[in-house]
Image 1 (spheres, rainbow, N blue to C red):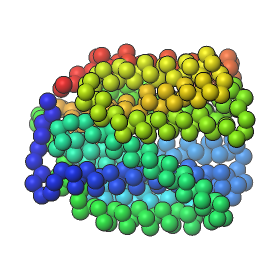
Image 2: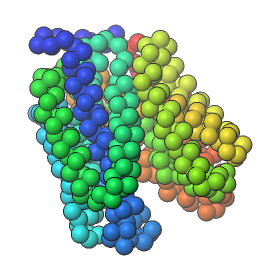
Image 3: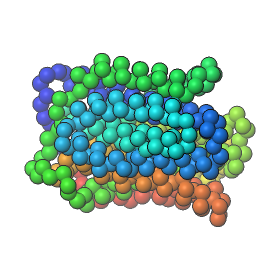
Image 4: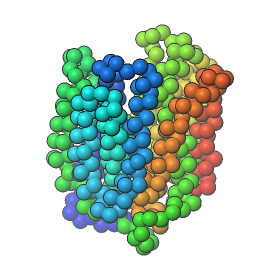
Length: 387
């Protein structure tokens, strides 16, 4: 059973709605940058190799911010940190739009990544508290709002391109929207974080076995996510030989079921339990990717990526939820630890695909990622939960 704690000021639904807005802000800011990467590439006249190297600055900033985010949330509470991050993250988007050269853009991307991580850890720490108020799983629905915001951000980005608006003008619109939403809803966030069940307040602690296992589960999932984000279009071009107009179909299929799966995952988590859900997720990931590998044709591969999106949907929200309820580590620090381990999977997936594809072919690359995704199933049976 989860430990409930009392926040008497407002109904629990108010806190849930307010926090959902902040997950939406987080998603739309990230998607706005991602939708304008081709325009930035043209503006700065970057080669493919230069762009590839430049984009590593963003995850570098995210990794650099992991320990800092955990410390700040544990020291000052997630509400205050989230309000600051909700201003800094959209503000750093403006820096990306203003950057006149590759070096300044790289520096802006590091700042953008650091602010993204600060918002991610503080928002998920808040989510742990709201979930405890409900005494049931609701974490996946918050992450579903992030995915939904990603769709919205992509659509807005496409409309801005069609209107021939510069990235900076686009980012100013998103900044204004984000700040207005944060101001209107910030006072409805949880005033304090969920208490831990045991008592040491030292935030400089080593991760325990359960935290490491959750990090490894997140790693196994995020290596699949990173692959799907970066390589689905290439797979459809080179292996499926899809017509140009269908080259993004696999990515759209994956994103749609990942988002939809997150809105329905909480029901299945409550019904079947955390371990069964994680174990099923790894099998579903394997099934989806191997469908695309064994049957590299348009319809089967699209179905395979639809299945893969369902497989990854619940893993990261579940891992974050369990980490935030650690008995020995403050929620912000535990989330930062799990996020740090898992994020290496997001970084490792795309280059690993490239190395294996160079040696053996792209289908073999996806087969290897499918097997790594099954690690979610194999590791899930070893974690300790409170079901």
